[in-house]
Length: 274
Image 1: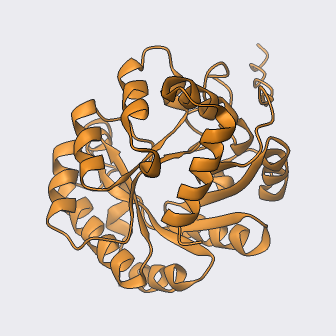
Image 2: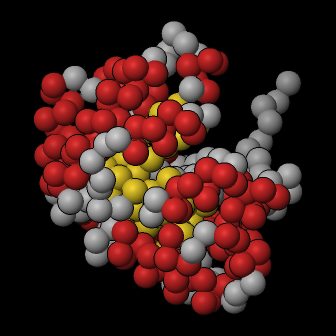
């Protein structure tokens, strides 16, 4: 039996100048970072933040940010791997975050989904919370944004963020929580970053959250190679596809996509300290 052929890399619906991708994983996408960035630039992307969710990927993210124009890095240990945050990892991450190419501490946060689905391979919630608090302190001391991963841990995350020092900016990446969490988060001044799942047909509540977020508190991202937007679900995601998410959010907010791109670009610069 022949192996199923992978679906081809889709092309963007249109080139939208001035786009940003606030959270992607160049090291995990199919292809070399320079080629991925070139395709993104052809689709109108001016700036992107590539994220390391462990030491190995963080090193590669920094390398891309140092070498490629318009590319910036975020560095941290993912909550599911929080047990890897030993003294050596803390020392290395502290040095990474001090690098000018690194604009955020992330992705860190809390994840109870994988505790349930893979308890043997996932850090427990106590270990995750300890790591999150360390990352928060690092973001505060470095004066850089905090990039949060949250999967089925809304109450726990809001509790930790409420009683911790406050970073210059807090980004809830791939925001997927209910409307009441969106309201609480924006009331606290957090930035909500929406990924391709906002385009999924069933996600009306998520689109409503994208509609209600104040203009100065919204970003978009691919979270590539995950969260491929409609109409290309099933394909491997990459930064060149961010336009589909931009078009969806512009529609639900009732603005021109070019206007939205300008808002997002200014927010990217402010949140990441550019």
